[in-house]
Structures are given as structure tokens and as C-alpha cells.
Length: 68
Image 1: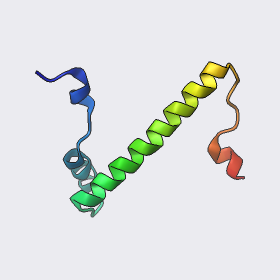
Image 2 (image 1 turned 90 degrees about the vertical axis):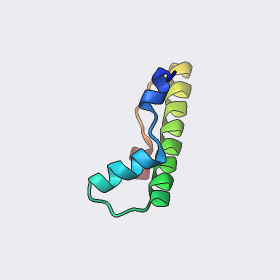
Image 3 (image 1 turned 45 degrees about the vertical axis):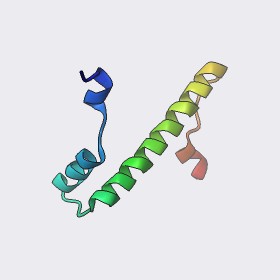
């Protein structure tokens, strides 16, 4: 039996199909690397958000703002 998380999980094959459907010429391995990188970014963003929300501080400066 599939649980709800399986329904939302993006596999390497699904990521590859999504990228190629959008006109990107990527291999399955490249699609897997892109998916892995996006998961890495998402995990870091969520952890930062949770850390900031636990401290009670207002988050005004994002990483992009700090570059300038």
C-alpha cells in the first residue's frame, strides 16, 4: 500500500521526464544530480526557517539580500 508521501515523492525518472518535457536536454544521471541539489537547497531552507521561527526573531535579510 502506498502512503501519501510516496504520492508526492519525485523520483529520478520523474525529474528527468519533467526536465526533458520542458525542453532541457539532460541525461537521467544529470536529472538525478539536479534533483539531489534541489533537495539539498530545500532542506537547508526549511532548517533555516525553523531555526529562525524558534528564535522568535523576524527574518528580514535573506541570503540573496546579503550578497549585495
